[in-house]
Structures are given as C-alpha cells and as structure tokens.
Length: 564
Figure 1 (cartoon, rainbow, N blue to C red):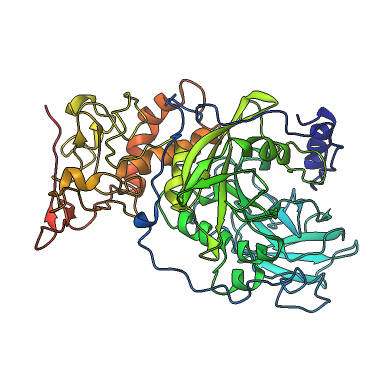
Figure 2 (figure 1 turned 180 degrees about the horizontal axis):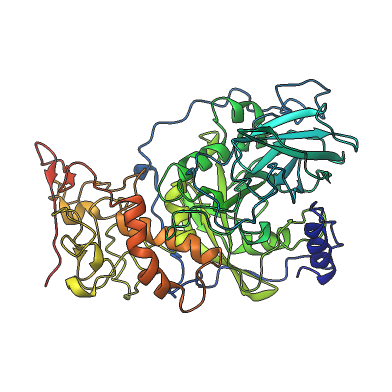
C-alpha cells in the first residue's frame, strides 16, 4: 500500500503556506498481503543484514533495578489530560513542552537570517493524536520563544501562552477533532518580537507525536548548526506498542507520569536512549512518535496487534509485524502517518515496546532485525524488539553488531563501519585510527582487539553493544559442575569510542547530509577528526577495563592488544 501522489502534493502545499495539515486518504487495501523479515540492510557502507538473531537482552543481562510502579496504571483518557487545567479535561493541554533535551548553544549555519526585529517566519503545525507539533526556523538572537494559542482563529498576545527555548515543541493533551490555532514570537535581548503568521492544526489519527527535534543539530565540521532539515527529512523514531491491553495503555504513556516520575514505557525508552552519546548531542535530528494500539491478549496468550510471538521468555518470531507496521506508515486511512517513508526507506527506525504482563511494563528478552514492506521490496525498516532499549535500538539505527562472545556464532565479515572484525591485525581493524598512538587516542590499554579468531574481535572490553551470552566461557574458569559462570560486559550508559563515532555517522547518513557511496569517504576525510576534536575521545575509569569472575578475589584488568 503506497502513499498516494495526491496526499504528497497536499503535504507539500501545506508546508509552503506554513501549516502542515495532511488529510487522510482512503485505504485501498488490507495491508496484510505478505510478510516481512527478509534479511536487509540499513543504509550505508555496511551492507550486512541487521542482526537477525541478536538475543542480547535476557533477564540476566538486565541488571538495572525495577522502576517504581506506575501510580496510575489504569488511567482513562480523560484522567490523562493535562494537569495545569484551565478548561475542561478534554481540551486542557499538558504544558510540558521542553521535550527535545539539552542541545549545544551554537550559531545557526543553515536558516536564513530573519528580520532584524527577531520575528518568526514559517511556523508549521503538525496534527497528530491528541498532540500538535510546532516547528519554525531558529531566530539566532532568541533566548526563548512564546507560543500563543487558542481554539478559535485570531490568536493574539492575550491568548494562552506556552514558552519554549527551542524552535520546535509538542503541545500535548489536546482534544482530537478540535482545531487549534498558533502564533509564535521570539524573545531577544531587545524584548519580544512580532508574532508570526497564524498556523492551525486539528489533532487526530492514531500516531502520537512525543518529541520534535528542531532539525538543526550540531554540524561536527563547522561547529555551527547544519542547515535545518525539513520535517519529512528528520529521523523518525517509531515506538510501537505490542501486547498491551486497552486498559494497560496508560503504562505505555501517561501525562501525569510524563511530567513527574516518567515511570511509563515511552518516557523510560526515551530517557534510556537519549542519555547516551552521541544521541544526546545530536538529539535535535530526531522526531519520536508512538503508536498506542491495543492488543486483544498479552504476548504468548493470544492475538496481539502486530503478531509478535514469544518463547521461553524471549521474542521468537516477528515477521508478522511487517504488514501492520507498514500499513500504519503509508499515510492513508485512520492510522495515517504524517510523514510516510520514502522508497528505499532511509530515515525511519522502529522500536517495539513489548508488554511483559508479569512485570507490568515493557520487557521481554529482545532481538533486532529488518522488516520488509509486503507491498514494496525496496522499503525495509530496522526494527528493535524488547528490552535493552538502547542496545537493541542501536542495532537497528546504527547497524552495529553484538560484541559479546557466543559459541554458536562465527566471526562476521569485515566492513569499514563494523564494530567487529574477523582478524586482529592492527592495520586491518575498522577502528585502527583509534589505537593508541594513531593520532586520536593517547591512552594505552583501552582500544585493542578483544575476542577470538573463531568468533571475531571488538575494540573495547566493555560497551553498550556487549552483553553476556558466552563471555564467561572465554574469560572465567569452569565451575565444579563443568559449566561457566555468567559474565556481563555491557555498559548500559556508554558506547565504546568507535561505536559512538559510527552512530554519529549514521545520523548524518540517515538525514541525507552524507549519502550515497561517497558518504562514508567524506566522513573519514572531513568529519572523523573533527568528531573527536569536538566531542573528545572518551576514556573510562579504570584503564585497562576490568572484569570479575567467581574465582577472582577482586576485579582484574583485561586488555587484548591487536597483532602487528
């Protein structure tokens, strides 16, 4: 099922007049005409399939303490309306809007200079389920922005007002079917500027807009900002509910916990992923959505919305998810997505939040693969399933591989963008530029070649992309029963330096700033050194990094160097 030309033309016309209102087209098919899951590639130089069997997140691999229980697990839609109410519950907005995180305070490189009075031009309103996204070009001198809104035309400075430090925000807790009108004024040292032209949007549909990055993220090379990406060209992250019953969708996302403990599954996912570099620095590149679709039964107990199956506490099959996911992305019908993916698909990534009824939150041991559109073989989307959110999402987004040792896997083929290698010869490693003394890294005993010839090598002992699996067999002594202890080498809040670099590269590639066969060559020649100059080479403590097996009295340092 494809996005119709008429819908695209309407979207482009709406963009040109400053208000994005994408009317739904009628569905013309069922969207269930095939299955996905064929091996596929994430765009870029690394042409391997995404990890189809990456079972890195079993319960033993999730040492983090459980989050506090959601205090309102069964809140109704009316209960989840905004807390700062001045109108009826159905129309009161939630006034949390600073959802794009901390960004570097950099000059604007791409947007055209606005008038001297600091007025805002080009305000765009994006309609979504109970939310409206607001987006406008950055005013370089602005310290913040005032967003005036009303439910009738003729917004003035006497209307209700929201404040934002970024030129993009989400107005949430709105009533579907009600039109909302907006105008924005920039605040500079000289005071508040003139209001922008008015834009309007009517919330509706199924997709909820959760976070809207401004699209002018850090330009690694210049130190300014990249030219502001249009809304369709930003990186769209799709959080998909699977296995939640209707009365459990408050655990997926709830406006009360969103403003408070953030103890809901969508906010936990966002906080886990965007606390890690380089996602934290490049956050304005991302737009985050979630799809609150209820299932008839819990996972493993009956029919679910996307047909994911589980076995032994982990994900078993996911191919059935392809048809309903791409049907929800085609821009048609009641579930129309405002920015349907191109063909081939480049800047959309999916993460399925799998509800674990026993834990009362998203859980289930996960995997990552690619799902193919049954109606278009050129559309394949990286899709992460289950817990270990940052780990699995980085598989799907950055095409990075698992670094744990697993006896059932063989060493993978070499690639310039791969974080594993089949041989440990120093000069052939994809991360050779990060070896001590090679020009970027001055710390001995950190970057090497950890692993075996049979299973492959990776650059640092501990990393977000490591895990447990058979690590104990290679670093610890056998137990008295002849088995091996569990040994986790994952760092939940840190990527190794090479993985940081490759993830940053994928941001520029997926946003089409660096694209095609020359994209990675440009990264190496123009961006690589600048990336480490700007963000630093990160050295953990201690070095060498340590591990502790049951036979060890204390943690012991481990370093495996590459071979000349």
